[in-house]
Length: 273
Image 1 (tube, rainbow, N blue to C red):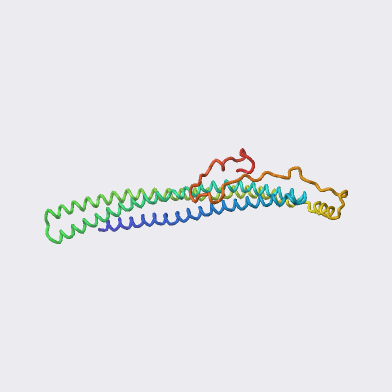
Image 2: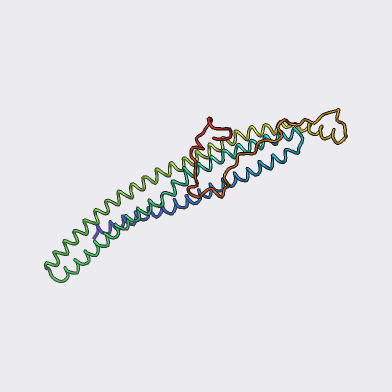
C-alpha cells in the first residue's frame, strides 16, 4: 500500500507541474500577443503622424519645412523597424508559446492513464483484502495474481510518465530561455536602430535656423522683397511612407508573418532591418 501511496504522490506532483505550466504559459502567450498587437497599433499611429507632418511642412517656411520633413522621414524609418519588430515577435515569441497548448493536452492524457492504472491497482488490493478476511481459497490466489498484474501495470505506467513529464519540463525550461532571449534581442535591435535614427533627427531639429524663416516672414509682412528672398525647396512633394497592414490585421497568434523581412539587414532597402 505504501508503494501505491508513493505513486499517487508522484501523479499529483506531475499533474501540478503540467497545470502550473498551462496556467503561466497561457498567460505569457496572451500578454505577449497583446503586446505585439499594441506595438502594431503604435506603428499605425506613427504612420498617421508622418502624414500629418508632411502635410504641415508643405505650408511652412523653407527652413522649418526642411527640418520637419527630415523628422517625418526619420519617424517613417523607425516605423519600418517597428514593423519588423511586430513580425519577429509573432514568429519568435507568440507562436512558440501557442504550440504548448497541444503539448500540455497530450501530457495531461498521459497522466490520466497513470491515474486509471492506479485506481485499478487500488481496486484489486481492496478486493484481495476482502477475500483474505473470509477464507483462503482459489479465489484469493486469483485475486493476488490480479493485484500483481495491476501493480506491474501501474509501475510501468509510472515510469513512462516520469520520462514524459521529465522531458516536458526540460523542454519547457529550454524553450522559455530561448523565447525570452529572443524577446529581449528583438527589443534591443529595434530600440538600438530607433535611437540611431532619432539621434540624427534630433541633430537636424537642433540645427534648424529659425532666424532665416523669421527674416522671410518679416520681409513678406513688410512687403520688402529685395532684402531677402524666400527659398523654396526643390523637392516639395516627398514620397509618402510605405503602407503597412493595420494593427487589426496582426493576429494574436499567426498572422502571415514574413520572417525574411527581419533578416534583410544592411543589404535590404532603406528603412528596413
